[in-house]
Length: 211
Image (cartoon, rainbow, N blue to C red):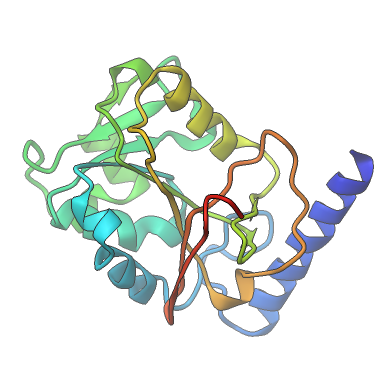
């Protein structure tokens, strides 16, 4: 287990370093975060074209900055969002964002500040049935192995919805990332969330459930 933790730490630092040195990390910087990246808007638009996204009525989304463009696109498309509060804070750790009941522009609502202002705090058992689960990554492998920033929050978010029975059967897990975040050889532990669809500004990768 210590070897896995050490290897994960090395991979995180390698990705943060590469994004920073290549000049493709955006504010607020890559280190210690789910890194924001140049091309996040293009990745969001590409994701919105996918049939899994178009079919989804309710989408779970992470609160991190690289997925802000995707949150805005989803709201603009009329999708209901269930967003995690940072670090799953509070007794009700999710926010419900229903575009039919929110007047401000999606670009405002999709920000962290906007979500807290216009969203409704809910617990996992109060969430509508989620058709698609969106998460951020520090790194992800072509086989769907995901590496977060080390807090385990994405794993907990998914587990909370699953335990509450609020994940639709077969709901895919999707992430938007920069090409530099795609790495092979990411070690996995039993509790680690896996990704089904990887979307970059340039392409879409689908992972077989048997991989």
